[in-house]
Image (cartoon, rainbow, N blue to C red; front, side, top):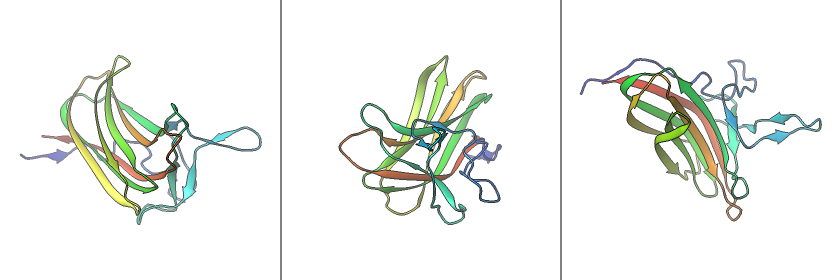
Length: 167
């Protein structure tokens, strides 16, 4: 099978900092925030990153049931049947975290694939899925520390990449 990566990274901001190492969370939404003394919400960005990842990464912790500690970003406007590949650098303290690629249509999740891992040092992980996508569909990359009130864990994410590969 001859495949060609055609798009580079479909995600606007794959890491959580700018080129000059300033914190940047643009394009990512989530349920876990740090709140400063004036009540402003800030994403949980910490000084830790894989080699080649700069200084900062995203740190997630589980929410109390049933709230999930997560962050995600969306991509629209893709069409046709292609392979989509998500690559993530991740490490965990405690038990595992996960990331997924999800396809949404008309507000409903129609397909998803996920990876669960509990590496205690930075590790590059990936998943691929062949999707038939309509122009109105949304692809989501979902990063998660899960939801629990029993297990303490922290999951770090950085250098997230979503590629479209044409077969």
